[in-house]
Length: 279
Image (cartoon, rainbow, N blue to C red; front, side, top):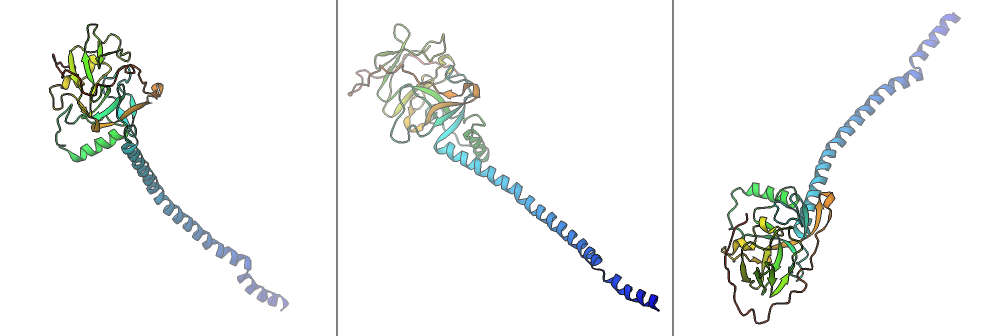
């Protein structure tokens, strides 16, 4: 009887063993925690790529704003400004240089929109393609628009620019300009010219004269090869790429001795002995 009683009393106790109850409850709890963690990982994963896209878009928007208002990258596509600028250089154009009343000076290397002076204005046939190209060009990732040019300012409003004198040199307001920035062996101009720059206009030329299509080639175009000051995008101040050429765009003292044009204007008007084409 004692034995039977003991077995009877132990039976219920084994069914309500606290250790077994703990094991039974722990199993489902572990499953729930794992499921919650997986769900949390999935929910965190989705915003991560969205966050990356948003940050990337914000960076691009910021760069476009800086490019539009402060400093724009500009890819050099030709040899017209050698040796100062070389093909493939990416320069930074300072858009604030002439924003607060200052104007381009003789010797400045400027980027300008040649529409109406160097090229005729034509409607954009593919607006979307043009927008994408302009965006890439604004970031320095593509060649600039065909209407954008980079040249050196040789004459400003009122200046008389003549080439060449008896020794084959350029003169501005009767003063000889020693152009040390030219490609060695290049002459100031193979085509003679004698012009007076109208007010608010610029006479511009490339440093590699034999490879530059500049104001000389557009004497017969609308505006006579003169670039309106308000078409200047900015001044080329820095070479940002490649790293081996990382520097400021060298200035020049070639025009320091040039006097201001006479208050009453030059006694003779512009005379153009000839024109030419240099590609």
